[in-house]
Length: 294
Length: 298
Image (cartoon, rainbow over all chains, first blue to last red; front, side, top):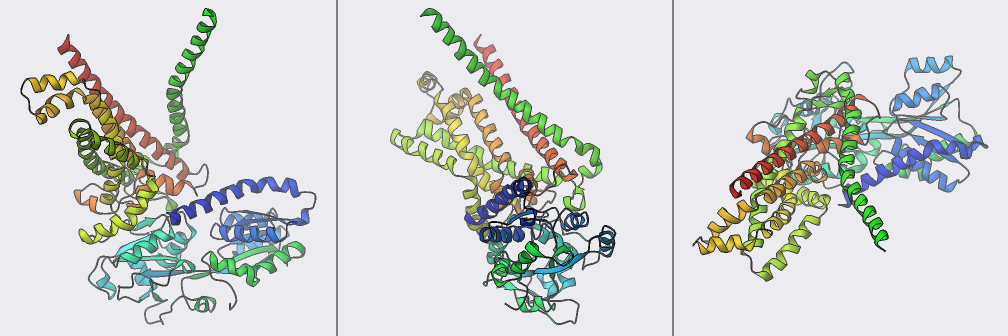
């Protein structure tokens, strides 16, 4: 039961902190240097919140307000000069840089963590390697039996997270649509949408027909992780901190924070802290991949 | 003395009246709120795409038919389980069981009714669904059937306690009259007691079904939440997505005032109308039955 309640508590805390956010500028207004406004990607929002909480408990003089809204919203706010740090799960676009420059803002990029998605199956499943195209065809419903990708004669049961999660959208864009933005491929209608990571893992653990995906950090050791090749004939790579950091694993992306110009003072201290081993430990706890070689 | 008593009487009467009316007021307010938030759906989504078969809100597919059929199939399945089991248990407790048995059974059934639905969902997810997958040789155990079985279990205590009260309220003279005429115990139960308690038993069934269609946590955990149109009997053995699970899963992260937000409220409206329809149908049946009974008696 605990497994299902925890995400709920996390969500409530998040809503609570969010609703508290806008109120804090008034309190901290006199000393504006001690107030950091942080906004953007919903993928990163929990990570950013965890960092902000930890940092504030160690530096009570600093107030950090974290809000979600999406990468586009965060970058737009940076361009308008209303936030100090914009979170983004994608790289800033050329036109956004131009827009920022015409507003007198110089976006500077910081890679603060990496996000890798592991494709997982039941240990009984003999399939251990798939190409991105094969995974795409499995999830779009083109393949519906494991035999078609070299496995046993079993139906394929597709598991996914709910549609409103960043992971779902990222998987749709990178795997189902193979990174092609004109592609209109959708998840097969009978894809099971499970409300929690634990739901996916528990189903995979007992069901040899199932295939699922989740953030690398959430995958327990007793499930089988699929090695993935970018193209047919390419080498099959298992996800790990090393293969994600050297970019050989195909379903991984960098997560960014953008600032206006090279950060100084309070903001520089915060960003330096984010890249420290202590803060990167939180990255691993939340299921992302830490940057660097730890 | 007399005056203060009158005054007290006045206040108490008004208070009771107000709490009675407040139920109507709350229902009206809830409906008003649902309509206010859900109505913009008609302006934002074409009715053709609203009654489509694909639900994928992040790409603007707002077909709610799979959700409606999903809720219906799970609820009908739950009803098929809860009604016979619930009424059977109620008959046993009220008519057949010896006194000591009744004293054990009644609190146990009530305890079952008090189990939080998340606990039942958890058990269903970890125990029932793996069992059903192996036992029925299904691709996955997260199906409409799993949801129906658990919801049936959730609805049984509601049906039992209301139906048992109704059976208990049937005057003893009715049964004694039947026995005196030479009716067997079964004939008495089936032909006399149960028909006499009909309106209460029907209320029990309606409350049980209402409990089942509105249940959220359990179905979200065990039905797999795949928005597939469920029209055939075989759909019972495949995953479905219910209206309640959709609202619960998606409301948390939806942007306030967006089309998706309005459609979720629209689904709430549909749910509300379905329960209203069921209740009206039930009370009209009860009403008609009463009238006939009154005619016969007069």
